Image (cartoon, helix red, strand yellow):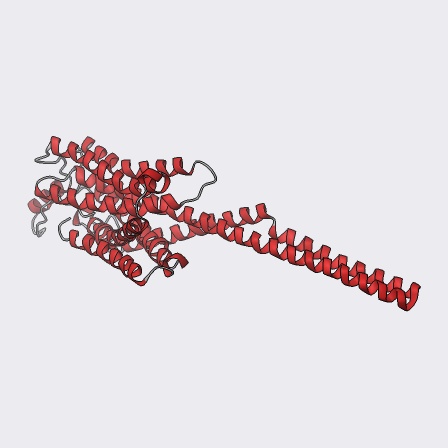
Length: 383
């Protein structure tokens, strides 16, 4: 997110060496002025509670019957989080990347190319798509092998054809030996044998359809699992950044940034928690969901603790800091944009379950998504 604090640099015209030297010194200025210890430490626990509330509401509501929440409420919260994630990528992370990587303090270290943030975001999008494809393809091969559908189907088909041919040959030979009456008798036997073969074929086809259905269900669950963890990776990456940013912010900008981050973390938590609750595991599903939710809850406070620890030596306008923050902002923007558009917006609105909703519920889901994005866009004016 865009820093809500003074960066400590004053850009002159560069007309004389004195102004140039002062600009260089300001770029490497370190330390944070007017830092309020009590307020910043208290903010760690505020963010911890808000993020935990957002991510654990859907998880506990799904697994704990006593804490069951109306499904419509969780669905709307998930779509609200979708809008927040997309807006965060486009309004907070990507512009922050442009601001950092095109800062005059970097000079020509990035090759005087102003398009680095967009390039890095595209790289992140392609990388996430490739990773998701490779993992899904691997999972598909593993599940297909475990079900043994192609080999099993071919084997049954071969047995059925062999059985039918065997019946036909036996009937022909028997008819030749025993004449017309025998021929009639064997025709009856052939009909019965053919009926048995048809029954086997139907049974085999039935099993194949069910096997394919199970495989399709497994693949859907596996893709959902992979996309959920990719989403969490992107969220955690940028959460460290915003935690660091918040911990070194001061003055009125700190309170505005804290409010923005709390709303942001709560809504992102709803979106992530809803997907974590739906991830299917063969065992320990609740424990795995709790561990993933706990990671999200802790990652922003961890970033804040890091920021507090380095506040005296941290030089936010130094080339190293600007490049690091700019690269992370840009990569995070790409990951969140891919996850938000592909795995949340397109996937959630394209399911048969969603298409089966009442019209009023569909409208509410769209409205929740738009409201989430709109609020984050509004917050982007100040934070």
